[in-house]
Image (cartoon, rainbow, N blue to C red):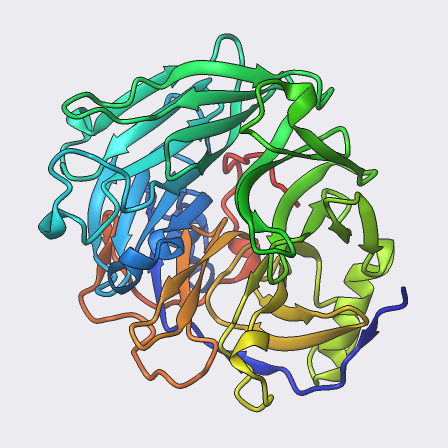
Length: 452
């Protein structure tokens, strides 16, 4: 199917709020010019490798918090309303953290009463050190924060997803396995994290994505499915309620390139989108294993850049360099488009470039619509994103990047909060605005495998 770019003016937005999650203790070298020193502390900070919000849980909508996993193996929890750090877990793992995600608020922990349920009490993280950990966020002590620790023998934990109300965790590993951990809670006893079994035939290389999703059929019957994606270019969808891997397999999609991101979409989550390491995107009907569109194929970045160019930005066609992720949501930036509430959700794609710019597109069946140009927040590649409640029935976009920055974006353009609150502290230093010269990148900065 031929994709076309809808000729619409793309609006530029600046961050509603931004924070630097970490600073280096090193002092700028005297050999660096004064002009280059501006923003030096940002170059010296840690990468944000993964972020997650509690916005997926309706009961937490008014008190959303955001977790960010840093490349120094720590996890920082922020309150999205105040922007303040509410918990910091130092040395959460012995290796790079692959992914973090919140448990749903209704997960049955003892003592999780109404007064304690402003934030989800538990967070799960997966790491390349081969462990999956559950952290109890009701304590501010890093040493006592671990509720459950699960070790995978001689494997790296590359991704994690929670299903069935948080009682089951699926973990994708470096040895092409999808392992299931029992997180059921009994009164007075923390979840054991016992290994319940593994899918071993689905993939032949590292499993890069796992995702539980509740789906509905035409008659409205709901069930939970699990999508797994791998470096081998295959995307499989399972019914985890079935007793064996063979019986559980519903469909296998041959994407044809190493997979980096998957996401369900559609009114009944009947579709699935796949982003690859080749910077391509395809959309499928997962139940029938039929491809709906290859969304421009290898020329997708060119199509996206052309769409940006037609909106008056970067006419040289080099605006988009990588894809971050796709999401089925109402992005709150289509006020000028007359839509009924049932049509408010759509498939959106977030992309970016190495200068720190982000671009949000609406991806319809036969056209690409540029919506927002995210400008002035990041100074490096965007690594991950999530959504949080904006307090008035809508939501804001949160992005985390390789520049140690966590940025919050009001896509409607109706908010007027300051970019960074005065005396606002994140991590170990005060946040301040500064400009960065690209030539001031600190040599020898530790690099971590980029999904781009």
